[in-house]
Amino acid sequence: MSAYLVTAPAAEPLSLADAKAFLRVEHGDDDAIIASLIAAARNHIEALTRCVLITQTWRLVLDRWPDGGRIVPRSGPVRSVVAARVFNAAGEASEIDPEIFVVDAAAGALAAPEWSLPIPGRGVAGIELDIEAGYGAADDVPPRLLLAIRMLVAHWYENRGLIAIGGSVAMMPASVNAMIASHRVLSL
Image 1 (cartoon, rainbow, N blue to C red):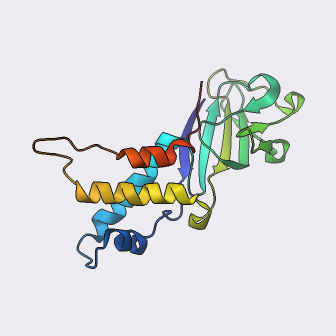
Image 2 (cartoon, rainbow, N blue to C red; image 1 turned 180 degrees about the horizontal axis):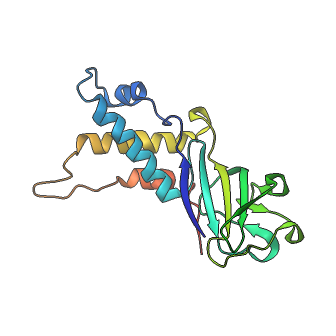
C-alpha cells in the first residue's frame, strides 16, 4: 500500500508568533526561516511518529483488498474515509460509498465487510481511498508533540549549519526523541 498527500494541513501546529516567543526573537528578519523550520519540524515529527498532527487528506493506493476487510494506514490517527474508488480493467473509476468503512480508532484501522468491497478490475493500483487523518486543529495536537516541535525549531535555529568545531551537534536532541517516543506508531 502506498500513500501520498492530497490536501496539506491548512496551518502549522505552532504559530510563528509562538515560535518567536519561545526562541525569544523580537525582530522580523528571520520570520521566513522560522516559518520554514516550523514546517520542517512538523514534517520530521510526523515522519518519526507516523502520526499526522494537523488534519490532512491522504490517498491510499492498494492493489487488492486485505483479507478480512481491515486496512491499517501507515499514518494516523484516521478520522474518516472521504472518498473511495475501484478501477476496472480499462482504468475507469467507480465510486464506493465511503460510509461502508468504519474507523477503528483504537487499532488505527479502517474496516468494511468483505462482501461490500467490489473487486478491482486491474491488478495494480486498483483501489484508491482518500482518508482524512490527524489530531484536528492546532489546539488538538498533544502538548508533548507541540513542545517537541518548539524544541526542534529552537535546536535547528541555534545550530543552522549543524557544524561543530571540536565536537558534534546532534540533528535532533535526545530530549525531543524522548518526548515523541510514546506517540510513535510501530509497524512490523
